[in-house]
Length: 180
Image 1 (cartoon, rainbow, N blue to C red):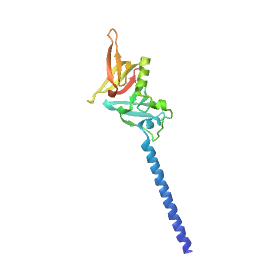
Image 2: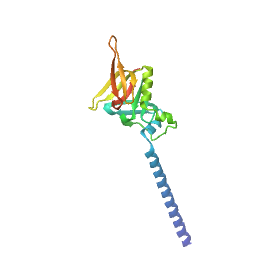
Image 3: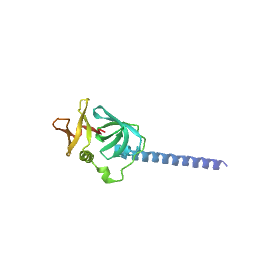
Image 4: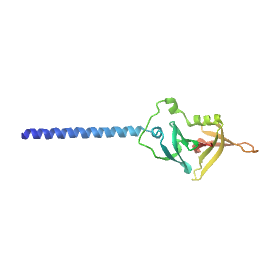
């Protein structure tokens, strides 16, 4: 009878050791999977949740994520649509723990210049939020007249005013908001 109790105790200890090892392995797999997730994956996994974006240059937007590529996202912020380069994001609040990879490679690889060219084709009036590097936010408004590899041309015009063009390097771009 004493031998049976001893063997039962050994079996219980062995089962507990296997369970603890399994839990440690599952935890390590979860940490490894999370380490492969990108900011874009996390944003893609948020569904219709409203998120708060803090951007370089003291710009802030809140809204629901609509589109996510690897280097940019677009959100609905009230009546406006806002295009945000992910490199301009300082923080995002309101995220759930979910992440979702983009299964379609073409959509995942679409650069911000593609989205800006679509805005240029639509002749949409936009507000470009810029990072002036001195903490003071700056907003330039107009229509995107052209998009180069690393810049956009913003054309502004007013009633009876001659049209002028402002060149904006994409590195200074913090957000592009529609002027609906």
